[in-house]
Image 1 (cartoon, each protein chain N blue to C red):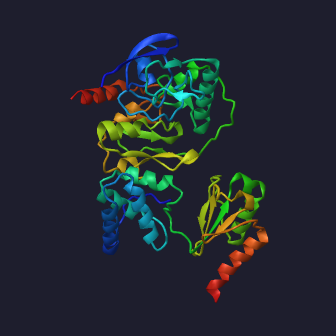
Image 2: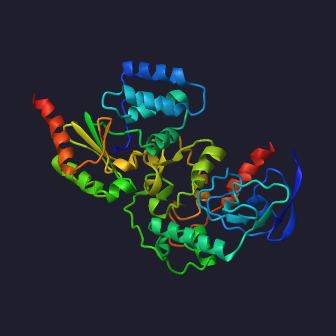
Image 3: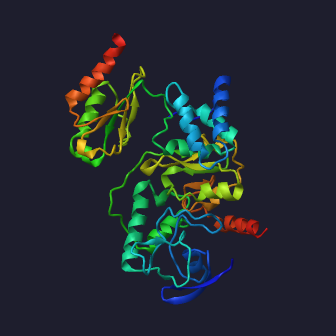
Length: 177
Length: 235
């Protein structure tokens, strides 16, 4: 995560968008959540750049620390650019007992990703070419289908290493074609 | 508004005002309930779980700092079960960060240390986390040492509620939660910090301290923050 030292203000069209979204949501309590969700949705790389957070704080009058707190508390929000494809591996208890750690390790290996090193159980890694993001999820609520993986918002149950790698390789080859 | 109620704390009948919390009533009447995140003059958040008490008729334990009193409430502030839970809570606070009293400016004046001593926490039964944490010494007068932070959020509330600057907040969640100033800017580069130092005085441990003190030398003036808050309420 990059510390927001000196951040350039967002471009004027981005500012207009932020102003419009804040205008729509303004007033009611908890508006910040909706504002951040919409902004992330409009972002090309599905993330919230520091300069956006700074500008949101300025426009809404909320303390920057509070905006940052909300943006980092919810797993929904990303502070780093996301890959084109997202592979989410469930690390809930049921999936864990059915071998989701091996799935996670396998897909990380397949995409040539480094260990985060800080021993965190939560993972959100993006390949340098921004093709893939791998993340962990606490539970999809589909424990009967364990182990579960989500590939680009579609949930797959009873995932095996082979099936997962086949899917990932399929997405990877898309670019070549 | 000022409806009088009678409550029982450890068997003693005490007159209280409806809307007061169990902790406020207990403290006003010389009853001791341990607490770390509670501070007079700040809003209560129930973060440290040390003020848990037994309320008759309620199966689970309730935090005294956020539970309002009502007529006929009977509270037990101490029992072997409560004592063992409080001990666990203190031990878990100790394993989460790197609390090394021997080299801490606040040793001898630290609320966490005092609580551990009062509750007989002479050793810790859980493995330590030993997280790698940073020290922010960018501010000219104060220093923030994450190794000693217990995430009580007293500094956050002091800054937001008493000073009105809201420089601090909590980022992340769970074990990854960290105190941050603004958008994770170094404290010294903060644009909203007024350098009033009230967060430092509110901090229960050595996580926030004035620069220039050696081991055991940093004493905090917590009453100042509470007094400021009560003066403003009176206006």
